[in-house]
Image (cartoon, rainbow, N blue to C red; front, side, top):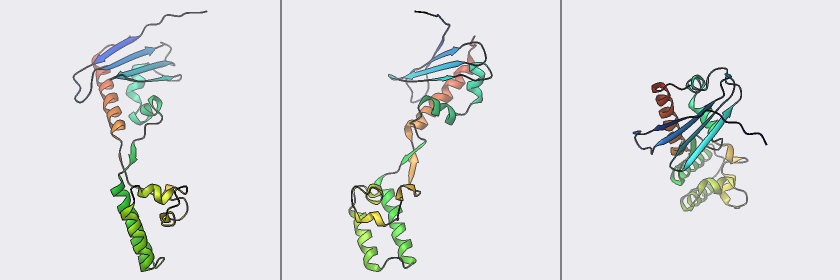
Length: 177
């Protein structure tokens, strides 16, 4: 077994509005190529490694944008999430109106779609999920998932951006070896 010891810089960032203390662990391997960052807050932690930075870890962190960094820290964290059912219902109702204007459906089909939308607990799923078997499946045609469904900014993503901005500001205030 081989064991190596390395130097790690730890920062604790406090006093950031709507954040608990943020702990940042920086491992710059000194070769302007490799580095690792671990960030933790409130029992959650995120870590990423870069193998081709081309500069020191701190310089690299200042150079990259939040979207890239968040993708490295949490690849499942999307900047937007599905909007609520009310927004999806309004979106589906606009589709009914368009289909009616274009004479693709008659007034009775329009009324049926409208009533189904009004009574649905999950309009998007009823329009998109073929396993449910809703009559709303035909409203958008094939592949309704690919339509421009309403979305809203993801609060978890916005919080991560705020956290990363705090890390960058903290790195401007300290000297990291």
